[in-house]
Image (cartoon, rainbow, N blue to C red; front, side, top):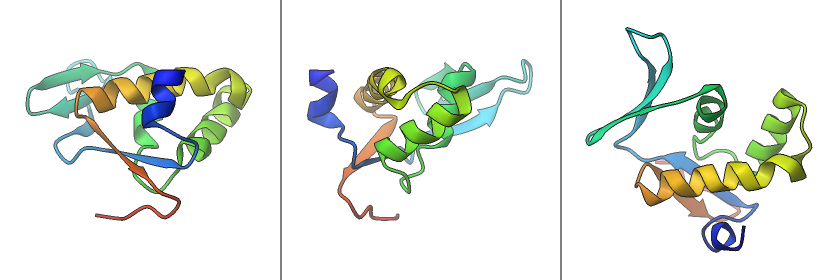
Length: 105
């Protein structure tokens, strides 16, 4: 989690990069993340995480919402969510506003 903490904090506000968008695949009916270089197939959990990354929620708020949805403790799911968001960030599919007051674009 140390590496994730360098990028994400509880008060980070993640949002999808402008080049990325979520939609439902017309063939499979599954959620996908589209971006100019390709497509990322999302499982149910990945889709739930990505849908909350709109820049209006902090990492802590995302974790709290998902902990209620999946009936898991925040402490149990936060490391997994943080790793997933860092992966998206490293592939330039996510922007992270590190502020208590996110800017809205």
